Length: 464
Picture 1 (cartoon, rainbow, N blue to C red):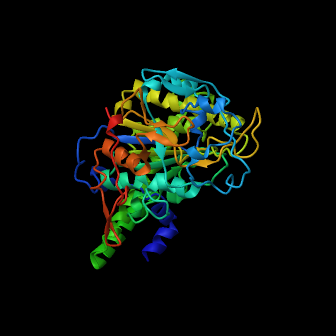
Picture 2: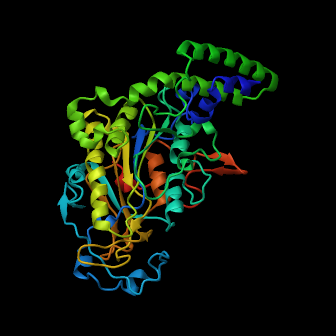
Picture 3: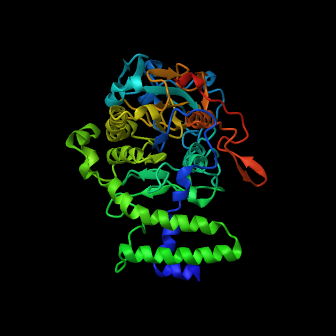
């Protein structure tokens, strides 16, 4: 009966699709309070899907240019596995970057000429050059970064944070996902922002560009706001009767989900309408910021969501998987992302928000120091490389003007301060006031957690 009533008004779809938050959750999550004083209140994660080449962005290796075309020494490779895409090549010719690097900021960080705007905010960045991962292919690598496990079905970072810390705004989800429109490359799946074994109300809600930012949120033709309100009031009464009869407290969750959807009918259009932003803000983020769905527009929207108290904002930007044609491909990717990412930091900073907003930039793995396919004077490609890659963090209690970790002169192996994916997750939670070993949820008889059962260390060296 309850299902038939909901379906009659199109309301059941709202309950299924808008389940990331509820008004009762605004007071807090599973944790009564943080385990320690947090330095970050919220996270904006700029995920660069496909695996950006560290050798063209943040990890300067002039030795590769000096040894251009020479085979990768066995003493450097050390028998490490390769993908099937380059593992059968007759040779693995070293490929230096075609792009120039310069030192920037207090740390003297080497940053590519492809990222001039990022270079200008170098003193806000903690650049980690020593990331490693266990996965060599895209799907398990992305899943590992986003959920802490290479196998699908585990809760995403945003779901864990929503579960643990709750929401700071009863009118918006605690966890929002934004994807750059019109980008191809490796596919993205909703399970990357899913809840796994956590209750479904912690699911990330994807906001889209266009007239309908959240699918099925608007009232159907012929149903106005008052009609919707009346329907929800009657539906609540039916749910309460069912709760009294069955004792099923999931009905309270369903009621809260309907109420959240109703409030979002006014809050979502308001926060996604960028027309009120002054011209100098659009200039800051770049010309793409006026085009809905671009990375620039999504960065600007992320700042607006952060202002409204959204706790975890996940941006995905595809297109970094450059097995061939890397010079032109990465040049375009950096053009699309460099200015908006730097503008986001500057914008948060001028509003006094960067101190308590953690911003993260990075992909799922790095790229090889040798060319996949034919190496020429003007073109080359790079295969997947899990043994080292670069990312950066800024704000939210992170030290700015810092470079952490180092790779070998060939840019193939980490030689100092290795940072594993679980260390990254432990550090992210730590900045939000969470001990990664104590945020757990019972699953299959075990106290499951984001960092799993393996050892994970907080990277204290990058914390202010």
